[in-house]
Image (cartoon, rainbow, N blue to C red; front, top):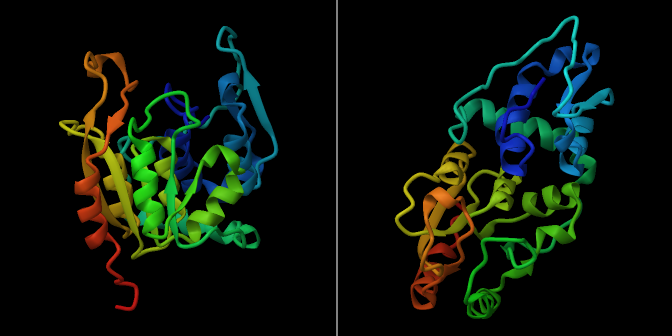
Length: 248
């Protein structure tokens, strides 16, 4: 059993649940994985297959499930604060298992838009896209690609830019000494998960704080906000962000 109240989400499944699975990877041939029915999603099934797991049982949340013998791997760290060496080893394990799937690439400068997501957009993204494309970035939407295509294109990415969101978790598949720039909400000092992931993975983390486009937004309401990016500030950030340090 690998789940908790948040593990069906892409970010928490990759960064919280899978490291727990990695720790017990050598015993997995003897296990049936038990998950709630809301975990029956492609990214979860694909990653379980990477671990060689084919025996997965989904149950309804209104069911009582009797399990004669249950092993419950504990969390390897608090959510959003991975143990650096463990997370690097876990990342390397995934890449080694998927090495025959790492041929898909779209260049080494990638900007990921959330325009196809249901929430959390950039209000002035047209201006952002014009700027990043002028600087050689390929604009993509993760919704257009399979899990393994996302893994592969991120493996080949050296410079990555995106707004705060689950897709940013894909820095997990970037190589060490690459760079990631997060466009994040100003005055939000709590959501530092991608800084923590980048640091654990030895990725150079950059960020730019952006204004909230929603006048009546409350942190208690969740994360429905849209951001407005200061284009002049982003232009200056990119000048520094794109300095080539990959020959060092």
